[in-house]
Image (tube, rainbow, N blue to C red; front, side, top):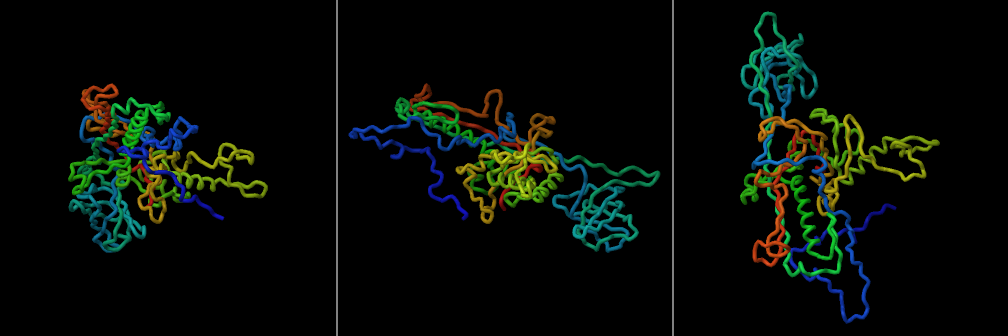
Length: 472
């Protein structure tokens, strides 16, 4: 009989941190009129393990200073020329024709007299080869067909045209006109992140009975140390998740009206300029083949890392396991993968770290997508989870871009962070203490306030090489 985890009890999502002092913050189970003392475990039990989720950008990117409110870079355009929405004014079997280019964003075509073109019907696939005889206007060109049968499709049929060469008669002048290289210019702006922890002087002088510890190794019996360290860890997580989730403030939005700019996070950029798999998880080799085919049309980066949630990780493992079956003693088996065949007395390893299918794909679990207090707690049901992200494929290595701040070409990781800094001010990660407690002597406030600040943005170079896996 199929079973499932019951909804009660479940994992806790109520934050342990409180903004104000409540009754639930204090221990109330001590009764000094009771002659029996309870046994106590002094050390705090780490029931959720390592609770931080930051590490993604440290694995795939780098951090570099910037001294501007805006980061701009240029990315190469395509080398060859192709238009996909072209229609002919001539009838079928015509020896010549004039085509109109209606591709989005095209205001002046890069086709010149003497160039040879291939013209294909977008629907049926039939094609012609032709030579350009004139360019009457900014978006039209005339051709003469090489085939004796003339144009292979009817008037006003939508076609794709690309240039494959040129041909000139003896004793003629050279090519008329030249082409200028065109770059795509992208930009992003940093955002300021802040946080603060405050504790009054009296509480700093009070010791507790619980020995506390945090992920950064801080231990002791002073509760305010735990709270300060957890505020620091939480802020470090937000520094990373802001770079992942940030969106620009749209014109007319409430945030824009309030003076906020927002920023272009990784998910936003890949959703708009990258590749999006809309089916949640690719679960078959044919589906991965379609991804490989798309990568062929992009930068064809040889090595890629796929950061996945648990569902996508299992889907990849299950797909690869079914591809590696074998027969032993007349019985079908499906666990021979790995460097050595799995033995019945071995602990069976059912996971994969990567595979090669046209390109190398390395699989890595992404805690951010699994953590129930972050994206791991969102709806993952395919029928209702439009927009739920299951993974992100990031190309490995670096790319060459023209950095307008440096004024030269520079090698940059596909993902990297730019933070505000100069000789006088470094805003990568600032922390300072104010008040009159804890060693601070900056005001008459009987408290210690620990302030945190960072100003940064993420640059997603070559977003056309990224793949975002999501539902919807």
